[in-house]
Image (tube, rainbow, N blue to C red; front, side, top):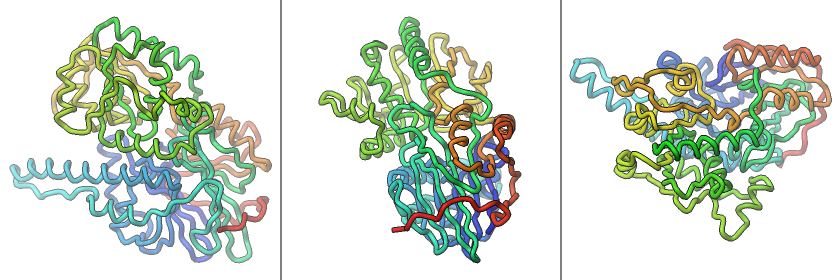
Length: 476
């Protein structure tokens, strides 16, 4: 009865953990490693376990740093089910198809260059066919309803409030007369965030595996965040330039559309042309619109009003086609452009940077976490220039970091959530940069919790933990 840590250890991305119990093997998450060329090259390395021996996969949520290596797992021989929330499965479908398309396109571009040099061609990280085979394996579940991925393991998904369908995984494991409960936080949402409910509080665990992305700092209050965002938009209007918002297609884009609708009059948004320039974000927004039962009370009430349509604005233009996207760049003033990718390491935002980033009347609003080694992190850290397709573009634009819009719980929220457990579990921190993780570990130890920050390849023998959790609920 052992849990192995194979990703997001002492770093933010690449979530991947393997449970072995009673001869069964269950993988929790299988995410892409992100953060620059050297880190991302690791995605092509063989898994540190044999995928053909896995019995099941449980996925906390759809973001690629949790789901993005699933097609590689399937291509490597895994042929079992991939369990996640029903809404999460709909988002995984979109994200994996897009990631596979981009991988094939990037490989084709690279191979054109290689042919001219008489170099050996490269293969895409995975193909659309790999992604489609993975999508066929998805099995959707509702929140709060227990089920068994394999005999001896009972799972219940709880609302994590991070993105649509994101889940805290409660897992009861029984083998050889022993029983332990492990809780995987996944990514915990920021309390009070637009659209989704706050993370569910869980009362019991023998081992808590918890994220630590913002373990060293709290976010600004929501009131201050809305005031800051409104002020940026009003000031940008006076400068007669464009606003660029690199946004994650899933989660952040839908939050922005909702918030813009709520403040449409106050922020004088009718004077702007708002573009949603991301085919993936457009599709993800359709999925968000399909699951109103997952909204928080405030959002549900707002969209219940007859003149409020889900994730729509009077002046919103969707530009799924490439030619529509290119036409935006003829607009030199009055465009508010929401485009992928969130960390600026791909997607259409880079084209908008090429046409706007050097302009002094341009404003860039960063609204999400930026991993080390990404162009987005460089902008947040004050880079004076950015390399775009081999060309150095000077940063003349004003770059604003609106940290309060994070979809992750801040330090105080993480501590409060961990302290809610009735009996203090042992804690393993994952999914955070070393400084944030160590800071949170110290804070939790100061509150009497036993905390570790496992290195990649480390494991925990669950039988060595005190068994204090109640019996599992009856699975359907």
